[in-house]
Picture 1 (cartoon, one colour):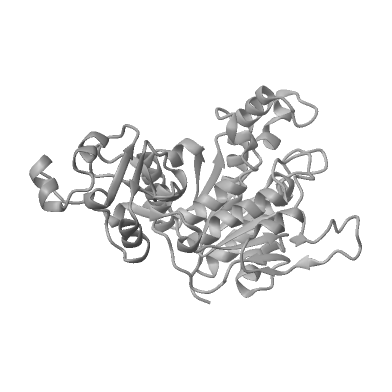
Picture 2: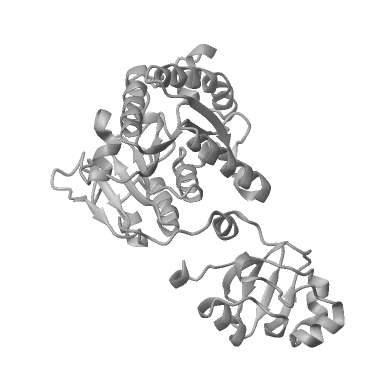
Length: 373
């Protein structure tokens, strides 16, 4: 089996016991699965929930707190306890674990995004096991982010993982609730996530997690355009990740599971995480050049400039019908581009002395139309 780069996401329900507290037996099982995959030569990143579950009892809560303040306090205590447990279990397999706490802001800011990628890349190069969790103690939004489902999708994309394995307490997606309908049929393989599939998915059925099947489908919908194949299902013990790669996993497979085109991390940031500071409206010729001919955006193709933005800011590109067709980092400010819009390159250069006669270089551009992503 060829060496693969895998992201394993473990939710709260797969780490806790009946009382909602952290279950070391379950944690140990997931560590064994990762250790087994490492022995087979694979690289593994673990995205793990469980900080709140690990910490609430230490603060005197009889069960998982329901208030935001209670959850954040429990996470502040529990994150250290969770990592302590992981460090000890991985050390028993002679593996080094490392902690990364991420939030949406780490993905929105380009420099922080690049720093996170560099850190993860170096850890994998050194054969460490990166353990990623949301920073629940300080980020209110992240507590309702999908119990790390979306985070695992974003991580799998920007490290160019071959597969994302989302471990849950349900063995895949069904056309109805298997606990209520004995004739419910499971989807063993789905080539892509379509809108009609969300009708089959429910919200979290667990009291210890925030993610449900809808959350996991949304994560899969995000990951697959990045060239990442997705598995949603139950753990099968030590061979969980091996079974996934052999097609024997107890769950639902999503994606082509063939060699897929990989979107570079820089373009993932542009497409998914960056915030636009304005818009550039272009004509039909420029639209065709960007979408189908792999060319840069020249001033001659610019029809209008909307908003105030500076050089290197991210902007949306809209066509003559005002539909957003992509995003890019502009080489010019809005004021400079207004001066030269519609001009040929020679005329534009005479006007503002361009270093390069482009408004957006093709390397700093990403299409957002369905057929191009």
